Image (cartoon, rainbow, N blue to C red):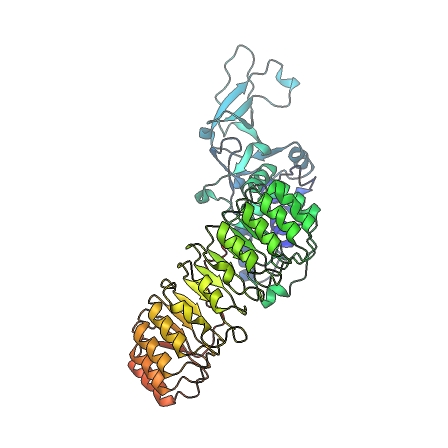
Length: 547
């Protein structure tokens, strides 16, 4: 079962003390035992006592309530609750679904007096008035006055001060949405209130748009990979998807034991899903991808990092999910250009694709890709010159990473990037492309005039001609990475100094042929450029794979 975190449970106890409410999902809770959020231990130090008192006051902030039917603000504050009689009688009242208040704003209520036709000695209370919502007329509670009205006599005028007791129905309330009136400002407050108020819990369930498990990670890191795996069964998914039926984003990443059968529920509950992350779900195959494709036809973002899917699964995906924009296929070693072709041809809104470490993909499958394709990550892929031409054939690429192609392309296989199809490129990652030479650099610097960031770290074959071409032609370049470039010398460094007029940041380390004198001259003449002695591994923009 999925349980609330200890922090939320503790915070919920505070809400129970404020609301004194037990809903059908909470059970019978002895709420009188949680009347204070902070236990103050007597101390001799006055400063410590004042600090504890201030913390207690902060923890008991007012909550204002509205009509649970129409949302009309009732100006009903939690601080006006009658707490002096907390005990067994109060618990009985709570079980009946009522809260006692000391005072209310009668301008927010319509009062309907009930006339007592029996002697006063026969009843426990005198005049009883119904308190109705002034906007929709729904019964909110009752007010009991000291005086008694009999048949044939006018009832006395009711007022908040004349009421001996005011009882408000718990289920007739909901927290006010007006943040200025003490609303539930934080997510923790809203989660805690949901544990005690069934009506608010229903509102939470129907309004939740995103769900991510504790074991899930949408941004891969060493910390996320080291998290223990949580077993998520089809039973868990059924309960959660049945509860949250308006989800737009679902992350099951890290659920390594999740099988294809678990995804069968998406055929029923996934119609509203726009983003689905299945990173490191090693049990997901083409069969599970069929459930995703057939049930989640509104998908725009799909991440299948390290899933065991093949070209068959990608073909199925392209038949149902025409609106796909961002697809992460990194480390999916069973796919090839055949599956890539199906996606690029049928998903005409394709925007971002990650095929890093897919060694069976050479890039030809992208030939004729839509112009909407603006982001491509292809680290450590065995790309061929024809594949590079296919990748840029759409003409819309703004970010391209082909880093670490040392064992893939020999010579100047990247030359086609500067052939005219990549005029919109703004960020280009050539890190670890050790065989890329001057001819490619010259062609790209001329053919990509909008280039703003270029990572050339560990590109050892770039010599003076290449650096001079960058300085002369890359007039929009703002960030340049030259870490570990063995053939960057003083002349090449001077070319970068005299050119690249818009350069703001230069990542520069381990360039042994550049003298300290050349570095000092650069700093003197280009004080507008910040030289950072560190190496950046990833320069991808953060807009991809996000709703």
